[in-house]
Length: 107
Image (cartoon, rainbow, N blue to C red):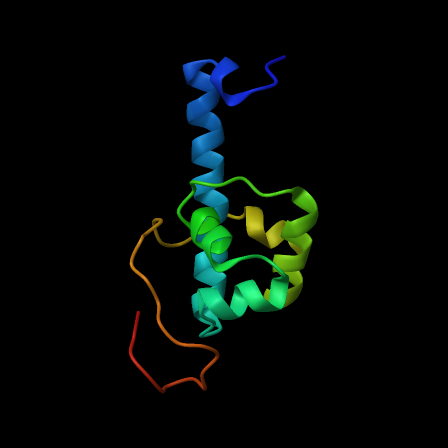
């Protein structure tokens, strides 16, 4: 069993990357549905904004305990983070904090 990313097979690396992208896209989808910025999600979950960006873009792994923090902020059960997102992952930033529906720029 590999213990470092450099020890993974190419196939395992691709599977893990796909999983990170799937979870990140779902977190982004749920966050945007609530008009919540990355900064606001970070502040409310105890993560850094850079970490939230890395998770959403599928570039960073996160301890599974932190996923509960994210799910709590988003007000969803933890298993909903593992559902396939309706939209593909994107690196387009959303600017703004929590907003009332129907106000501000669209993402």
